[in-house]
Length: 422
Image (cartoon, rainbow, N blue to C red):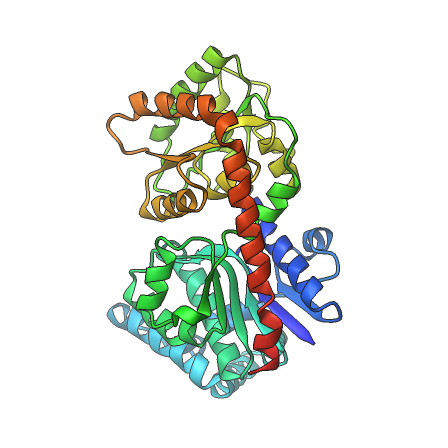
């Protein structure tokens, strides 16, 4: 049996997405001990150390498959029609993959270009017995290209008659008309979609034509990894994270307000500020923003740069009594170990993520909006409130984590039947 896994971050630089991938592969291995599990990645050497027993598979054929077909055939697309042509081509790829491959191969031969990676990409889908989209928040407007590609992969699998499942997903916001059309075409044919939150994801999926019977609420797949890393005693630090990127809609102007509030509370509590980075890519590294938040309080900190695995990041979060975070998975790693969080959000994407997380764990996940005019007053109060309630809510949080882990494991148990009964 061959299982092909599409995942969120091919670079393996996001510790939250990587934790979901690790737990997903581990659970699939328990269900299908003799299966060949292959995962799309751009970092094969790192992948092997994180997911032993699974095989990395090259993803570069996707670039050829999803690049504009008209342009590959030597034509230019007028600007006003580019969007419509792109959406038309996407549908052609899902409906007539053999025709599209013939056209690409023909043009590539004329230009003496190698399409071996394209053939590998298509064959990996067609020869699979199951195609899995592992957990993440990437079916959303914020990552339009990634969402389109993943939906294209699932659409191809559907065309080839290969069962598809999506595990541990956060869906949306999804307002882009083109992405909604693609999602409506593909998602109703997905055998199983496990959601990490129901507040926004469930109504969105039903609006896209997905049957309620196909959807299961489980919580985030990474909860199990963090829960297993929990400490017996409560920490004394204040965890720190801030995601400064376009999709978070957070710029450097937010850093100073958060820095002052964090450091004032930390001094009053005589508590260390502990980095809990999730994203390590050069373009959106949490390490850089964390070091800025710590400036003047702990100038010797590396911002968490030395942490090299999801487990190490989870254990770092475990040293805290409360975690202040602009990253969703820093929140997951903390709540799953019984540690309350103060979540920082500005974009609709992150507000949805954190509100969904709060819905899963309860009031111990407090959300502070970074565009609130009263941010300077509200943030220190929220941190102090979380600090004082930490011991009281710890058991409640651990119970919520246990419940979600059980729901996730039960949902995975449905997969073998879905594969054996096409």
